[in-house]
Image 1 (cartoon, one colour):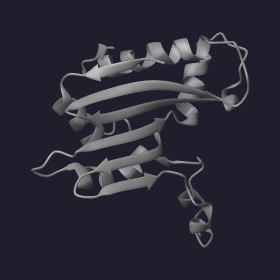
Image 2 (cartoon, rainbow, N blue to C red; image 1 turned 30 degrees about the vertical axis):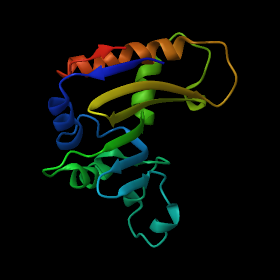
Image 3 (cartoon, rainbow, N blue to C red; image 1 turned 90 degrees about the horizontal axis):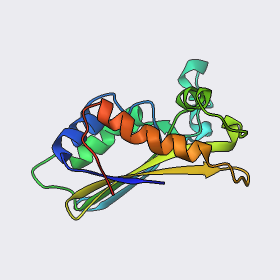
Image 4 (tube, rainbow, N blue to C red; image 1 turned 180 degrees about the horizontal axis):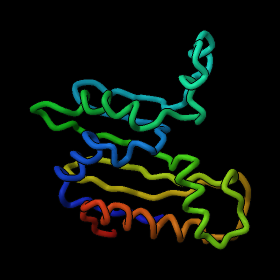
Length: 165
């Protein structure tokens, strides 16, 4: 696990909230604190889609994509006043996780691991923290090393300046 500070917050926030850069990530949770605290649980309720005539309308993941939640978060954050805080817990989608695993020398199978980032704004600072969740016990840390290397590289390659804490 690593944490990086985002010194150019305006650039980062524009890319997070108004572009498709993070759209493939899945949302576990989004919390925005403004005049109220708004909490979004990203878990998909399959019952909502039970009457759908089109199977393509039914999400295949367990969590909503950032592309679906992003407009809600943008509406909550935009305006004259800066939010008091926010936290977005995002998870790498299955297809991107498989891409990451292709270059990984690990005995763990992709279905037993989740790669995530926490994006937190508080006291005027944006911090992005990496995290890996395992469905089984392992001493193999190759996945964590790869994820901790990937996230700063992903941010920097998209012109988002970072400072490792």
